[in-house]
Image (tube, rainbow, N blue to C red; front, side, top):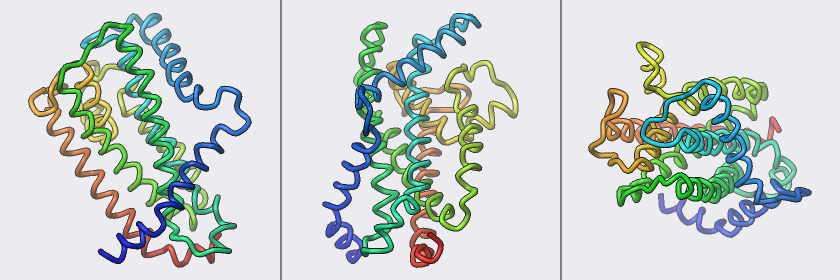
Length: 268
């Protein structure tokens, strides 16, 4: 373990440079730049609020519907963007991998980190919208560190796993887009889970990303993760389930990446 920690510390400056490079490349030749990180989720949420909130006359429960949508949209976009870029990171950096020895895990890890940083910046939009709509959370909002950490761990684990498999099976890029669509529709982003019943409700609650989203919504609404019960399951159960899933998928991702990383050079 000490060996791996020392190795990580040795390359921490390179990791930092890769993160900075990822942010710069994302907004290269863009006039709006980082401002688009704030505008995109807000505009998307406004459209979804117009369609599902106004046209379909959605009833509002514990918070304005646009805030409900925005929370789901931000978290899903973070997970989706992080995993897709991490999945392609080894192939995208194949020129450097072939020339210079660098721990290969730095590429998917830096991809997840810079996407997560942009996600944290985009939360500013949520804060502003909450103030405009008069949604004021209680002191329990400090618990938001738990679901946001879970999201980060989950993104790294899935990113390492996908990055490993994609080197050998490149069609995974197209398959993952389909899986992400399924995850999106099972995450309760633009509909209330109150309306779901039976097997559909069970499938949604088994989605760990939905559990993260619902935890954050609970905290924004001023509730407590350790005591509040919603949709027939406690927030504590959702938190434990999503965190446990994230840790397991991280271990699987790390072990698979470590096992096959020496073979990457033969397939990129």
